[in-house]
Length: 411
Image 1 (cartoon, rainbow, N blue to C red):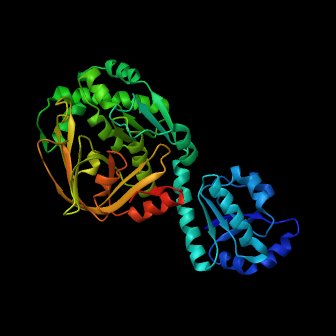
Image 2 (cartoon, rainbow, N blue to C red; image 1 turned 90 degrees about the vertical axis):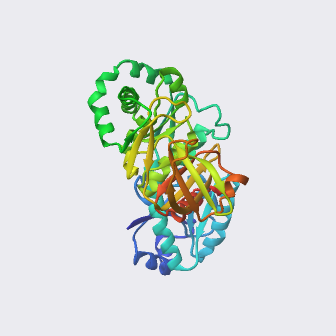
Image 3 (cartoon, rainbow, N blue to C red; image 1 turned 120 degrees about the vertical axis):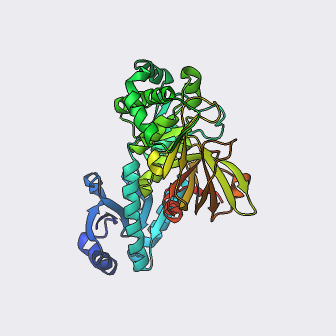
């Protein structure tokens, strides 16, 4: 693995003296990494894909670091072995970073621990780079009941590098009306044939749901979206059909798609896929059992590829259009949520999917879960309504990444 140490040294320390002073640490690093030393004055030559760590090589470098701060990679690590007052300078720099509202970490002490941390930092840095520049379409306004799920677009871009893009619902509806239901008859027939059940709706309902899907695909292409969230209840009011099937198919194609215009939930879905490679299921907690530490989550759409089998149903609340009842494999899961106006708080817990249920008064896909984290979190300090489920145990990996980014864990 290649790493670049952005070197901050006072004018009293020549390059040769710097190498001699820090020989023990540098030699240890070079046994594991291909190390390049880059003077802070040459920071503009830093490769965009490099794993870069500021190396505080001496005292008297605090102002030098401050001058370069805006160009340095996040999160803010500082490497210091303690020689030539390097640790003292790092402490001052770290305090200044934290005063500016950012998180800082000093790599110092046991070399084995430092090497492991650098390896993890490299992985996390790659994940963060994968997020940067992602475009999240907000099609229509967030649902009016999501009163605790706002996101500050500017702060989200600063912290995560993602860009929220507002798109009029009228744009989608125009594309919807530009096609006829009969245009998608053969596609609808395949979906019905592959379903293990088809209850309340008709083939015409499936055709109409596919019109929404293809209209969204046009917008995804035009706006170069990596993810989107849809004001689906407003869509029902305007068209009489739902976005549930469309969102399911988009998720199957790797386009992260969430419901109800929930800005925090769609970001969590995008982050989960980026960090773990697994598709996400966005759901409402529907019942909580603190005695058994279990909960039941449900929603009317899920990617078809996430299921063992699926049934085509109507949308639960409205009784209209097409919803998805997915049957998922039992086994290890992770439940998570990233929230806050600048996406700086999180919840993550491993657990088990115990059972797929079929209660008549809940959304169509229903999963009974047992969590490792106490479920009274939902009753005392939840991060909003919607939470995100992914297959497998990933809570520690997610927690490490969130905390590296300065996010606060909700207990």
